[in-house]
Image (cartoon, rainbow, N blue to C red; front, side):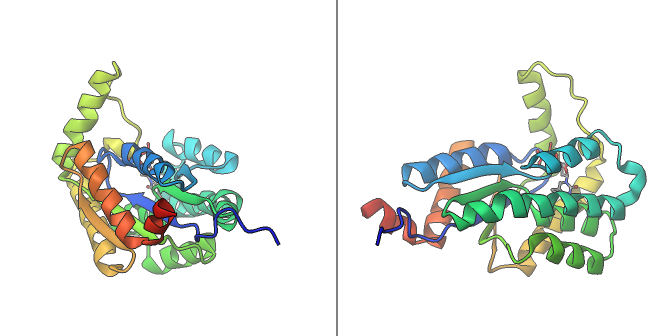
Length: 228
Ligand code: TYD
């Protein structure tokens, strides 16, 4: 019988946090660190990751769903997630490829639930429908003072030569961002088995190293892979 090329279980890792904390950069760096450890990983994001979910993403981020209210939007995010889980996340995990996602279900809990006021029972129900048992193995919550994160977003826009218009979520008030930050910290406190909070207020390189340490200690099979 042929031996499976990669017998280590594939892991599902999500990144969460407010705006401008540097998730996308760290997602890319983690995928490349995994590649150095001979682990195949796919990088994805939410909302999005599949054609249907990307269509929902542009509808929402253009501000077209605002009149649906936070509850309606929670349903839209969940519909996008349902497709993402079934078409991308589950099939990759099943074939042994790790999945690293820039945002996932905790974003709905933080944005639409804890900050947007949607009933936690509805959030729970949507989560169980969309995840279908695919709870992340590890969630890295990147935490930063929103005032600082704002400055980083502005600086990035200047560097990219863009006007700081922002999508509709980036236009929210500072106070709202503080509540959002507390929301993510709350989620982490209630899910200590799954979530690790890391300060995003450090250099990208330091944060990358810290993340890599967490991932290696969480999944010791990575060492086995390097030594093999
Ligand atoms: P994006 O440009 O990807 O923002 P970021 O770089 O901060 O991740 O836009 C996604 C926006 O959608 C972001 O403001 C968070 C919001 N969002 C929710 O409100 N609920 C959700 O369930 C998800 C996945 C995202």
